[in-house]
Image (tube, rainbow, N blue to C red):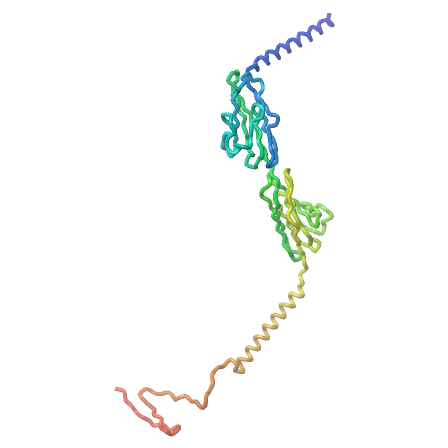
Length: 310
């Protein structure tokens, strides 16, 4: 008896699940539902993309379809009253019943798109689905700044910047076609160097350069869309000639001392005095107030003339 009851119990359970499924499907009949094959499509700039919006379980033969674009907290129509609107006019169309295809995608098309369907003959008349479009942009040639010459033992900074790529690119530096690690201490090959590379900002900083750091440098900016590199630039590390610098300073000081001595000797010898005496000259003695001196024809003969001032 127990063996006969088990098949009966299984049959009753199967019938119960079958009727529950029919009941559930009956509740869904006449209810519009939307789904998408890809709710986060990724596309390269200037290529085409399809925003999938599929109508499920609708009894309305001609539902109303609308597409909206949400960007920077602003909502605008993309497809309204059976017509492509806005900046997508001329490069977008409706595929099938409700999907949207965009040609020649640009970075300004990256946004959140919402597909809305109104089915008047269904029990649930309205449904919507959101799709986020991600547009990837390949980096352009980065701008690289490499110092041409650096004295040994001094700090040096190399910079690499790129502003067009999306998502933001990562940076890598090369010396003589050899990739540099983010930290020279992490690689025994660069034990004679002391640098740090920030792959987010593209900055390569040498705390103290050595002769081995001389070479041809270039940078590569890369993201999921592609990569770009700048032209090679040479950085030379040279040794400071301390003895030569001191000798040059001493020579300059010696020249200045000789020039100073020469000027002093010239002053003492009267080379810079411009006064001249033409013939015999003399200074007239000072005249006291009220006394005039009259010179006679004979040289050196003076006659005194008194005058009184009243």
